[in-house]
Image (cartoon, rainbow, N blue to C red):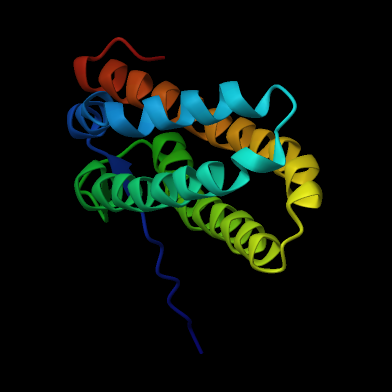
Amino acid sequence: MSSVVMTRTVTVNAAFLQEIKEVNTELWHRLEELRHRCQRPISPANCRMLVDRLSQMRDQLALHFALEEAYGYFDDPVDVAPRLSYAAENLRSEHRTLYLELTNIVDRAERLIHCEQLATLALWFGPEFLEFDQALRDHESRENELIYEAYETDIGTGD
């Protein structure tokens, strides 16, 4: 009995992916603002505002990831370098994980506000957000490397 193994490949549309990143300035400004505020002690009085901004950023990130997945990545391209396909699939799959991480932070922060545990939230929020922020920045850096590599492959200068 023979079995057929189907493999799926993913590639990146480097031009669209790069454009999506460049035009989403509101998301990057929101991230920078939250990063700046979370690198210093947080006052319990500022917690509600920070959680509101984080919630807005979560929605912006969801749209950003949806655009990247719709226009920046393609399933089953005709011709793709296996290394690019593997990297593209891994990066695309990280979107869900990152979004769920951020959603969990927002949900926990909102529960702490609801329970009026602002002092706890003020201590917890900064380090938790900064850890997420670093994971997102690492992801974005690897996506930028993929874009660069895809451009090199397309114009024939890649290894």
